[in-house]
Image (cartoon, rainbow, N blue to C red; front, side, top):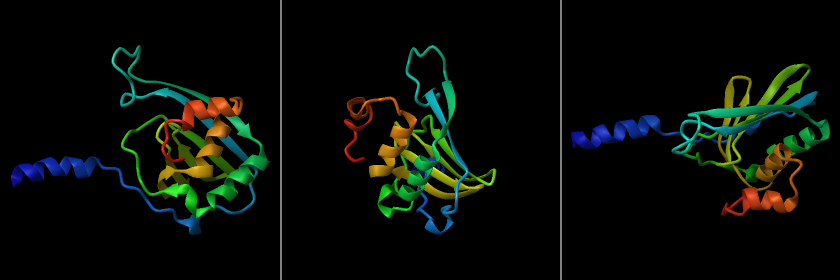
Length: 163
């Protein structure tokens, strides 16, 4: 029995738990701008044997057109785009920062590899889990706007059972 306890304690401590979406805290006002921070590369957890470095992450910042930001906010209000399941792998995540009156009002962290999605309003976590459906498609499209529909499908959707 003590061996089982010693085995389960680290598993429980290291587990990542999902957090259900709190729609009452989702920002619904007017936006000034949306900044996309597109990160690519690998971390210690996602690197492979023989990798040239233990960790390598590049970052590119760009401004998302306001119309696309409003469209993204509308999609975020849909209850079917969230999956209350948390992926085990910690991956490189890109960020979407929403601003109103010069202040950051909503932050989304998204991984194209695992569909991991976390949302914060200020310092408060309002969702931790995975994205699915049209939210996943839009986030990937905004991160890779120059890829054709065929390239997007081949690179991101063909291996996923559910998007």
